[in-house]
Image (cartoon, rainbow, N blue to C red; front, top):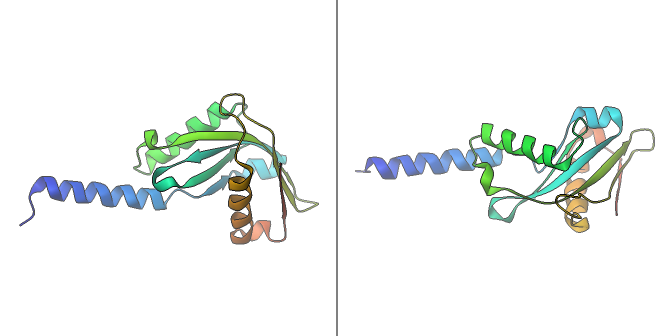
Length: 138
């Protein structure tokens, strides 16, 4: 027979893993696509996973990270498990089918170019809207 503490731990672990699976590796809000530019951050999460989170309606990288932490919390995952490890700007040129990531964050520093390239290339392959887009990361 399983004691109640073990059962609670198993349930908590299951909810945690389900919550992690609900966090997309790349999340670019629709207003970023409409406006053609946004701020983005790169986040280190549990199990050494990396995430890219982009928002056009926020002026500062800190704000983008705060919204990410709120979203993670809603999914049942502890926000303190995530750390912002860089940021920059992104332009999305629909007419030229091009995504460009560049710049740096005053608060979080320069993003890892290789990580951003890998995340964006994978995202472009998965998302039908971005079919045929080229990626430029600098």
